[in-house]
Image 1 (cartoon, one colour):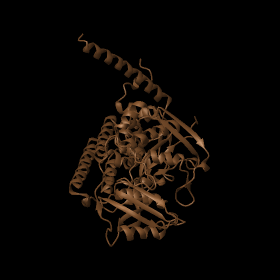
Image 2: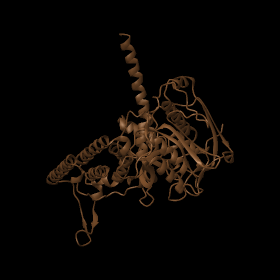
Image 3: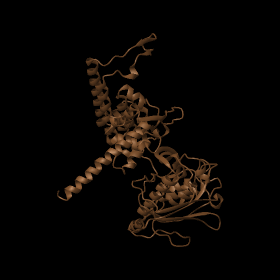
Image 4: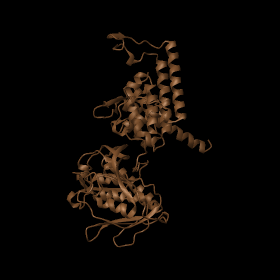
Length: 404
Length: 115
């Protein structure tokens, strides 16, 4: 469906005066792509229509010939000759108004008739990678900042020995990520479930390790006590976003990119686990969930451990498929797992066991065939390699902080 | 006789926000849109049409300039920055608005006291 709106937007851009179009249309098309999922289609089309009117009005009032149409060589006449465009005559202006009205009427008709009636207009403007985002809404949405961002009262940022971090986060082949790295901190601050959702930035984002601690102001701490767990997590992330902006001078923007993923889909034989009752509703003031090995799991939580044979064991109680996909993604590494099962209920996962692969996430197949087999045989879901639109944060600029 | 800065005043809300967004450094179009939304706490958002209407005026008036042209090979976006004149105009507008605010606050206080 969005392909249709993209074409419609480009058509609106083509209706702008030539000088304005040549100067800004490409950037407007790129900005439209970036803003598609955050600003809303209605707002963007109203904005473009307003711009169309304003630019033609300014053009008519100025009465100046279009600078792009200044005397120029033309190959269209058969011979290499000079043609000169003059200001509009009343007749030309009338023809232009009629032609524009006819095109707008065509747009409105096509909009009401549905996308299948829209002619396949040529794509004129060079599209950046984010423009090729397909027609779906992006998955794995990030936490967008909302102003005013809450702030830590005091925060300390201390560089530490990267080797002190024991386990490395899995990334595509050849890359590892310290759990105390700034990229990891950015992932947490923006709610990214996969390292690929944080794009760009210097190498030290992966290598340097920092101990970052913040003291929550008393009034905000009291307010947090009255919030649900999810609200508290979001507030903490927003404070981390502010810390990144202030201490690391982080500048970044959101985009949607098509990335390799694994889709979690129903297996051919159907689901092999039954729905259970959902966890109790989150209430303000609920204490944070602490999952410890050996303790019974609370509803809505999962735990992945290694048993004495070196096998991975996954347990979950009253969890949704989204959480299962996220945890499996962490186990596999290299590419995220998105939930496409269509199952909306809650499920228990009991001792899902598999042998971890040495080259987990490095190849084109899921983490060893054993995890894929375990999922299919025990749960009735499988992993399907695919490419999906994923929301990413693109780093435009970041600086090493001054330690304190 | 108006000075160079005064002849641009008063600024429209969109122009003011675009100039304000560029005080933080060079930005491309979408970066400006996000910065405007951030600075206004999400209450004021401008779309690409409004943005480039304003950028066109700002570029022609010399209040902003292109700091990096687009590169179709690498896909690099055009970025824009504030000029010295743009900075001066923004400062003059903020000063003008401060005067308006002072006057408005005084008027409201007097109205509340029933004077």
